[in-house]
Image (tube, rainbow, N blue to C red; front, top):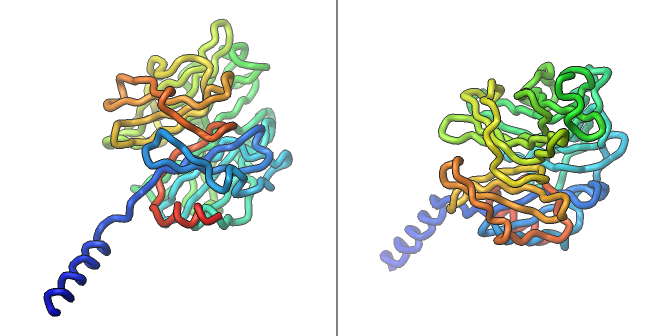
Length: 308
């Protein structure tokens, strides 16, 4: 009996000390973002199953147009989930909310990150990064300020000429002054940052349409989160894609993106962040998926989501 009890205790101790399994989640929007946050899950980072019958988990209320496009979710230093998103095509702020479980969300807030710029046209595709060393969050997004970079004013769509901007915060109550994050002399949107081997790797969309369309994903690196970042790499995707989001898997780094002219998702994969293989034909996403963010959660978080 003593041996049996010891055996049971050993198993329980092993289970208590073993890390909880993780699964992949993907936050995304559909249509124009009117109905809010959608979530899908995957065990292999290739085949994605919609949660809640592909219905919205959160209806947007922030901003004037009340959209929820480009939802970016990360897990913060306190274990909570933090989300930012595009509230409008034309407003000067972004949406923000937090959650303990991705089911129950805080009150949505409008963060006026570019209200100080009278001529700013927009705030698109905001993202979050938690810097563990300084215990702060960086929020970054794309904005067009007409005339700010006149040499490329004619390269985009309808006069848009974006650069990347950022602010930092420790508590989402007080924020640093907005600053320029990335300007490599071209129209750029949809940046997303990952920390790899002590360096910061930025994936971004070259938004040039004129005189020759680019609309592809490129990379830049920096030793510091807030830059300066290197000049952009050669494209790692084909043209007419947007909304990159990246994660490291057992098979290497995967960068997902939205083939928005074809209404399907795509991806490339690399083991060294240099040579990239297109794996779009291996993907399965819920119908109508638009771009968002890939991230990992504990199995217990998914178990609760599956009950919704």
